[in-house]
Length: 113
Length: 112
Image (cartoon, chains in turn brown, orange):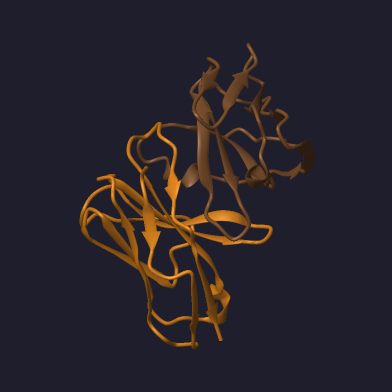
């Protein structure tokens, strides 16, 4: 799977949008971009995923550049409960590809009151 | 919402004990997984299952076994616990191959 690069930490003011970047310059055509977050001492939580089109759900929006070499996760109105480590993962979505869920270091997002 | 429930949040066991970690999901997912998470090593796949009574080894299966007798339940077994199995254990389930994983809250196991 393609390697991803994320900033180690970011701060965001409560109520403002949090924009978390991820570089995946070696992504291949059949690899999806997934975002998860992990709040301290809890299991990872799936947020959103996409292939090449921008995606939005009740939690966040995912913007993928046209060349697919980078993406941005947007939390439109960050709250204190959004403080967590956010992981960007690139993987092939095939049956039997369970091994490829590799979490890197992620971005520690701290939402400030 | 899909729920993945792990039976214990914290466990302390002695070296040599047989340990059972239970995981139940309530959304009829076919795919279930066991990972362990250690600082600096990320998530590592221990075993996974695509169907009842079906299991496949992940990347670090040594010292572990699994059981999936019913679709909703996937159990991880430490045959003879050792101190290097002290870790956070995470169960996950998934519906289709493109879907995201739903994780349980984790079980922090300490082997003394």
